[in-house]
Image 1 (cartoon, rainbow, N blue to C red):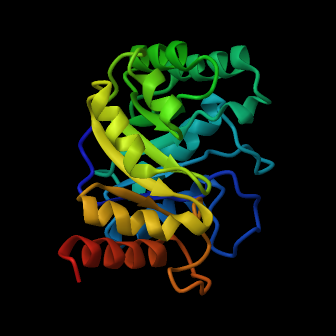
Image 2 (spheres, one colour):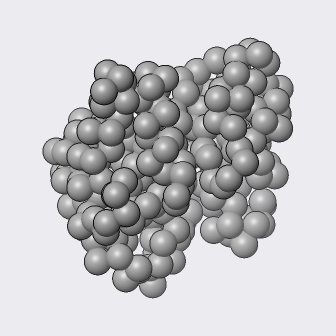
Length: 246
């Protein structure tokens, strides 16, 4: 999994179809959104595949269709997906079974990487399954406790420091990862009101970040945005300005 220098685009997340005019859900929509985001400067894309009804899905057929569609428009861009436990109603066995089913996907259909939340039950087993499939693991770390737990779970190529709510100190989590000896690339991002402050902090720290309609529907000024590509352009401007200290 190649490192990300500045930015990954999170195209849709768990948002409901129609929640935003530019929200991509179908494979064709994801492919178009990915192409536009990459043209705007995104170096990788993260997506939540959907079934025919628009619901999030870990099923091999839905994952394969979404990934293959994106590869057709962005053949040189790393493509990642979610493994969120909520998608199977927090049924760990069903989650494991669904991800194990990706073994039948071709390399063109199989994602390059997948996000796995450290706080969710079954993290270690799911990470092992992904390793057997040749899918790199992005470990989602939300708290200091997650950082400590990751230290005993083995190495991962990328750690997502994900700030979801107030009162969570991103720099303390980053320091804790170093303290407990967790290696791998760090990517820092936030959601909702914390999205833009974390893009700026990532720039100041020289860390890659993430942006997309999964994380926010508005720009740093609070104004609605048209699509993922618009968010990518805004985020790169914020990140670069923070990095240069201007």
